[in-house]
Image (tube, rainbow over all chains, first blue to last red; front, side):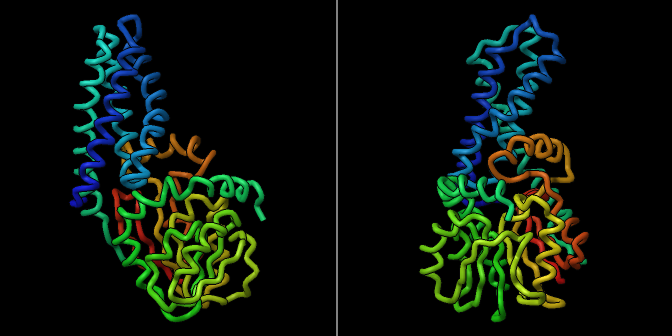
Length: 127
Length: 201
């Protein structure tokens, strides 16, 4: 597991910012007029390239794939969550951003856990 | 030489160090230092030396030929290779069209290279050709993932990322096996996406 404070803080900031941005954008676009499933697919389709571009400046500071993969996953998760809920009840942009922050933190924790599990299972093999 | 790939990386050379020179290198420094400590005293080929960001991690006193398809990248690399305490000879060469005779090198090293080589299996076969029999291939690479949702996400993003840089979903371990290498060791650095691979020709 990453233990260097510089990278831990960087990972957290990148995912919080990406989550907030994607949450706010998603809340601004999708409302109760949308079919929930169509909203989810359109939101995810838009969120992934947007989150990829959000990841670039953070990647330059904190690492490449270690930043890009969690940030893109945050974009996917937050856009799915906010768009589906937004298709049922109107979500204000600020509330979408708040949901995005929570989604970003949760996704980052999930990625850290996945990293530990995957590396423990297959971190080192010799043929 | 693949001029399309050359043009892509010549263009990328302008801002390459801004994107890759600080965060990624700082994060990967311990892993790269360990991998490159395997550099022996024989002839070494370093494929896709780029702007030379990996050079500070090389152990001193080695005899290295560094190649890259982009001469713009190599122009930037010279500052770092000139400061290296050993011998590094730079050449603008496409891996698919290397001028070296068979068995020219004892070891080959790559660093984030086979995400970008257009025909990865052919590229790896070319490396095998220039290695002595039993010669070593050591790679630091990012690849696709076997695990959901990372595999799906990396697959989808590749159509975008490949337009300005690397593919994000390569299966470099399998490609090395197809190219005829015996894969000896794989160590996952981040998820199963960032990894080191050691193989023999």
